[in-house]
Each structure stands twice: as C-alpha cells, then as structure tokens.
Length: 304
Image 1 (cartoon, rainbow, N blue to C red):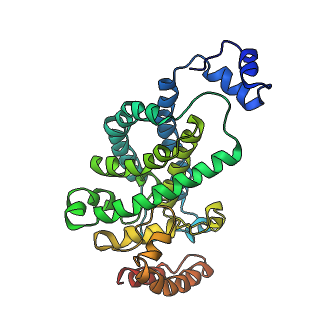
Image 2: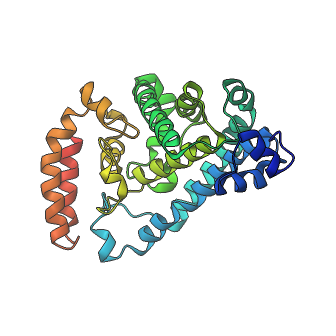
Image 3: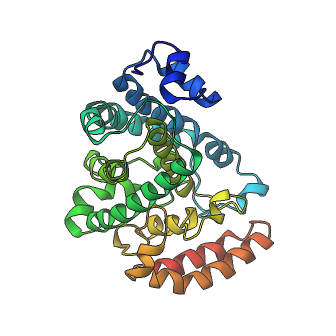
C-alpha cells in the first residue's frame, strides 16, 4: 500500500510531478495492500495461460494449407477434446499447486524487497532486470531439467510432461506437481537475486509464460519476433526434445541454447539438423503435402 493520501503528496515526496504511468499506478494501487498486488500474478498466470494458446488451438483445428507447412510434426493432429483435456488437467494442477505456491510465497517476496511503491522503474532498469531473470532462470532450469532426465527423475516425475511427444501450447505447464515446484524455483531465482518492482515481476512471469507456450506450440512460424533474439532456442529446438522423449539427452535449454552448446548436449541435434532443414524446406516448397519425407527427417533426428 502506498504511503501517500493524494497524488499531490506523492509528487511532493518525489520532488517532481508524477509521470502518466505513475499516476495510473497510484490510482490503481494506492489502497491495495502489497499482498493483494502480489496475488495479481496468480490471476495473470491464469488469464494468459488460458488465452495465449487459443490462436495455436484454432490453427491446429483448421489445419489450412497456409499454416500446415509450418507444423513441426504434421503427422500429429490434436482434436478439440484432446486440447481441452490437457487444459483441464493443467487447471487442476494450477488450483492445487501453482495457486497456493503463489499465494503462500509472499513472505519471501516481501523479505527480499520486491517493492510496490514510487517511483516506477525506468524502461532500461526493467530491461536489464528482465534480462538477468531470463539468464538466471535459463541456467538453473538447464541443470534441473537435466536432473529430471536421470532415470529416477524421469520415471517418477518428468515422464508426465513428455506424454506429449508432439507438444501443444496448452501442454507448456503440463507436468507432475513436483516438477512444477522444482522448475518454479528456477523462475523465482532471478527476482530473489535482483529484486525490482512488482510490475517488473508481473512482466517477467507473463513473458516467461509467453515463451513457454510459444516453444510448445508445435509450429515454427518464420515471422515470430523471438527469432531475432540471440541464442534463442524456439519451438523447433524444444519440439525435438519432446519428439525424442525419455531417451533424450539433448536440448535441455528452456529459453536460450548456450548451455546446451557449452556442455555439449546438442551435438547430435546440430549434426542431424542439416538433414532436417533440407527436408523441411523441400516439404514447404511442395506446399506441405509430402509429410512422409518430412517425418523421415524427424526420424533421422531421433536417431542421434
């Protein structure tokens, strides 16, 4: 809750007039407790998870020639009931695991100093903090993900997420409850190390969810703005990890590819990708009709 009664009082405390964004923030948050503001994150996770996969769902149901050529595994087709079943299972996990984790983690957020007051962070401050969050989460997620691919970790926990050998957007958070807790730690680690404003924290969680859904979408669209991000893995990179399944010891990265490159866990993928790219281009040039030749290249990737 902001320690000011009026906008004028806030301006006097800051020694300047509030910016438009700060005025909007004051109007919205002045009478809300920090706990209530933190709980907004749970609502955002629910809304964005429910809405972001919808375009991919419609594309999957329509399967037009214009989009079919961008389908990574064209042999697999998901019905509405398949996708809704996945959504329903994730919602159960959300209610019993994600929601409580968010709501009861507030004392930690409060202790590390994630603030809700004024002034608001500058654009550059938010950018650098978000970059740190992505890098920290990516590195921690890489090692935790590798741990989950150990024999015990995969059989007891991670195999649930790999039920989708051809992932869909709704399957991004589809996982065993223990995996949600383990990988959720990686998502919280950056903000705990470099605490910022609550708005930055919200934005971090939303962007991370955007990214996870995009990499699990099952489609590789050339116009995706994520393709301009250095070292970004993307949907085709992570789709390969799902296609290989439990035997996969490659492409553990959640966002970037540098860890896989440094620790040598994408050598087979890089070698086979040359064959994969050539066959995919042929598939697309034929209008997405010759699915068998494309799947042959996927089989080649699987055999690393």
